[in-house]
Image (cartoon, rainbow, N blue to C red; front, top):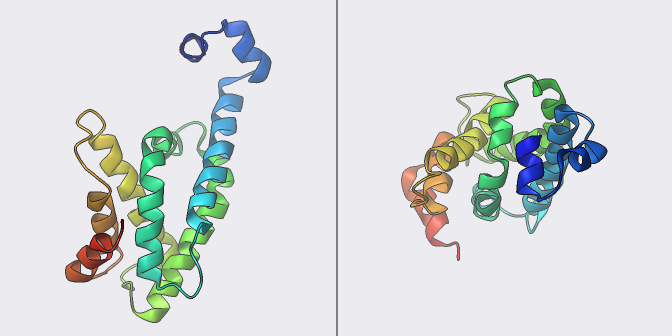
Length: 166
């Protein structure tokens, strides 16, 4: 909490006034992340859009936010896991629905159930961001292609989807 206060140029007491515990701070940040991620996920994505195109668009719009929220993937496995999982449930469900739609259309593989496959593919995006943190030499193509490949999209189609993005 001291580091948060220093970064915000306030005293610790001010931070504790808004967030009585570290858990309160983490959950508030998670709520903000969920709001932003759901906005990105639903922005311009329609049921008429092919699932692989919708996924590629989602990752392209998500990538600028990934550095900010990548810590949630780590915290999700720790002491704040239950609260973070609960708050991220709408994102998880929306991604599972998108992957299931892709599986039904044949765009995505059926090597895992949709809810697990969506988690694997979306977690890979955060893992890529986390590992590229200091270099920042990867653009959105790397996580988009990687996640599409994990979803079972053939590489030529994954590259085509990235090439079609501005």
